[in-house]
Length: 412
Image (cartoon, rainbow, N blue to C red):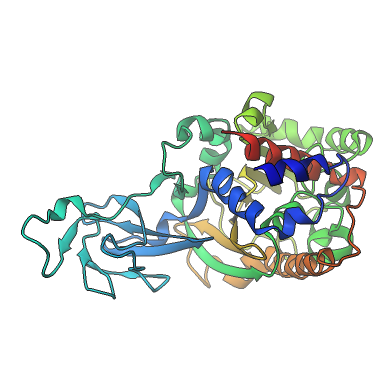
């Protein structure tokens, strides 16, 4: 941490981070231990593993986690590490198994993590002591969260509390996966996260998104409230006030939640807002028309867009008819991955009520463009000529992100 503290002294608020924050392997290692491994990470949707024995593997940095449904229908998470000599057990990304068998020496484990067979072991060997190591797991509204801390993690109920009203209204527990896509990104994870903290780049880089969204939203709310100059923010909020009031009359949650000072001191960074898409559009689709049947508690289309952020590593966007899960994963110092999972009403029928390519269009093209932007950013940042640049007034959330980052890096 001495190296980090030295680098921190070179940081100037209102500018981007110095180069070493993106290129130093020791800093990256500390970031994983002090930030990533301590967060409740949204990793998938429960509909991916509907039957006993169904599993998927979540890989990030050096960790690999098996999320599996047991014979008792309970979902558990285990480190994908054989307790014999440490081999990976599940080599496929997903599947269904009655037993998890290590491909090295054939130690086998039940879906509940118990060691069932280990050949030629000493007489005093006790199988019950050598089950798979559990990873902290919680399921909320159908979303699967894990926490990679080896110690007791932050209280999940406290973590999710300010987000519950909006999440429960959208009822992701009554949805299913329509389509998923991954976007490998050759860049440090902080560049990926920073890009999602601002919409300063949107008019230039995302014509499809800007065509469907109100241009004032792009400026004032594209990265959440407080990311634009106060004048533009106030003008936009005043403009949408009648729409917000109508939402309240209809019983639709519409309050903004921005992380409290107390929460920030604990390393939390949660956010909620709900705004109209605008331009007469009812959904975030190519033509602005609905792409699926209503989802959640909506009785009719009101053309709203909800943003729920659990932390910078995971968030959800919801229209009336579908949701998008955004999962941002650090892989190595200069490798990251963005995974998007689109959700629709669990009763919606593919090709009848929805077409995956229509549901996914806007955020697929937008994320593909983001991948190129971020990779170009990383390549330029590696130059010996790079010096931290001045952030615009529409990138204030990047500074907010930095402050959250510094807080977490200095927590015990």
